[in-house]
Image (tube, rainbow over all chains, first blue to last red; front, side, top):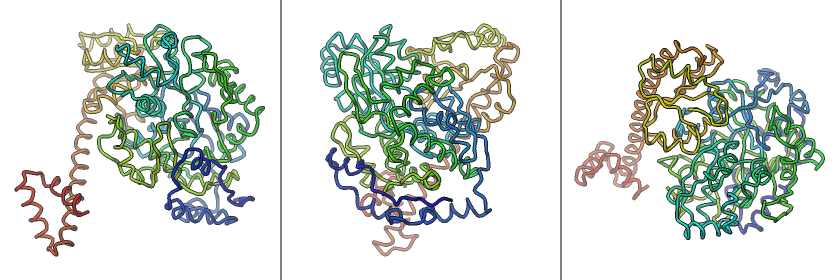
Length: 439
Length: 186
């Protein structure tokens, strides 16, 4: 194992900026307590790794991947880029594996193939992994989040018809819905997934009850555009490039970016099953290391992003025009109603590892929202589930192999668009139950 | 169930014929689009059939989640008739059976297996839920007993009797009485 050349540097101002810019409370004391080992600058990498894991991984004197060929599923979306690029740039071979990115048609298909082992891992919605862990509406299986693939870069589009009525954002949507009562339909991409949670959060933060005042449904992204065109739908939340596409097709406008709901929110993960990690720990580590390197490549420069956009625009991946992907990947936004802006908080794939760390607090947040919207009947043991699912042990080994810095804590706090602070070290039950609008 | 963006991946006519031969008289083909949840709610089908590689599966998923407590079998069809995949799907507890969708004579067998599997899964799941509930109950009762023993200096037996009396007097289940003790003393 190479030892990490640079000592644990302070996080990109992310954590600090969260505290200042978002007015969040000081990081919980528990952060310092829990993460004490990693704050020792210059500590040898080996001491950062859980001794049991270390023993398991290297007892045989080899850290060679047990399964050298892996199939990683992806859904054609901009944020599948790091998985695709890990293979396209040959970063997988550098870590002793070969990744075959496998295009999938539906999240349900991704889930089934993860569960039955047809896929070794996948580019998958954060909330979906937790939904399977708890058996929400489908098979239950012990799952693993190996890393977060990206922050930000999703959006909520509203129909051009609403734009014609003067609707521009959440507040004007609320006002219009009060003025013109009828059934309003909003779509997301998977019932337990991230887009459902962003959509519900945004509607509720604007005083719209997503379960009672609107009809929320699940629709595959390619159908969103079609349905909005014929007027069956008032808005949708999904990944890119579908919002850029909605604007290009003149059927809708971007009412909100998800970074506007939660700056630097978790999104897709590299997910697999607990069983896979147990059977192939070295392969799991190699996958994360390769995807970490690809993430770093994508974020390193605008020209790397361009090259990434060109690669993933191909028919075998996202199958669209490079330009539709690239602009928003570079943070160049247009809302479709004449407003353009440069968004410094656009989709991030790496952020010096900040965007990749499988924070326990991120996993816990999705559980709080599953509870909030009635997908879970009872409160789960939030921390225990997150500790089980988010494989920080594997991530750390991979980060060491790819020489990626680690944050000082397994927890981060955030202040979301409604001013409510998510601090996992406080009572997650109270957080989940504390929203005025909920199931 | 048909993905409106897809050109008949299922060979709907063949499956219809197979269903008719299997004795299903009311067969309806619907687009898996916005109207799907309403269509399912209105018709209450015994069985939902969809192509396994259809993007529209996520729409069906929405129905599964919103009817978590009254699930119905979903059959996936694919052209890829791979015994290993079928086995993998079944071991994973997926209520689905993957098979070559193009031969009508096989449809009946498929449906029989899928339906039997579904019923077995439901039975097992119910059993598992009951066991889990019992376990939770026992943990709560144990904890409440512990609290009573500690606070009141009772023996284990006395603590249990106290809990039972409390439950009976207030018309509560034992587990609810235990929860109250924990709420107050825990």
